[in-house]
Amino acid sequence: MADLVTTPNIAGADDFYADLIAAHQGLTKAESDALNARLILILANHIGDRTALAQAIVAAKNAGRS
View 1 (cartoon, rainbow, N blue to C red):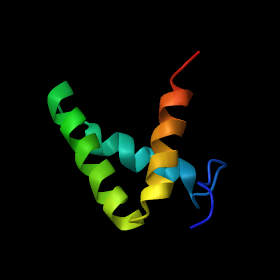
View 2: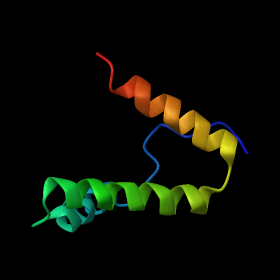
View 3: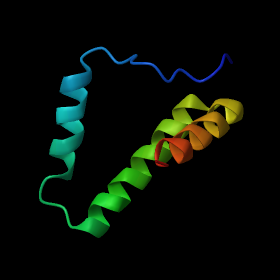
View 4: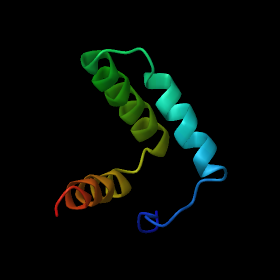
């Protein structure tokens, strides 16, 4: 698989973001964290490429640093 795409690549990105936020409405912090974990695992399974997933982990860790 090619390198991880980190530039905007989602059609209707604002709509996706709204859907994601709506999925968390009314959840406790623990429930929200569990939803995020399930979503990550479902999407990781869909991607299925360990190299791309490893790149995504690094990108996410680096994005959280100031």
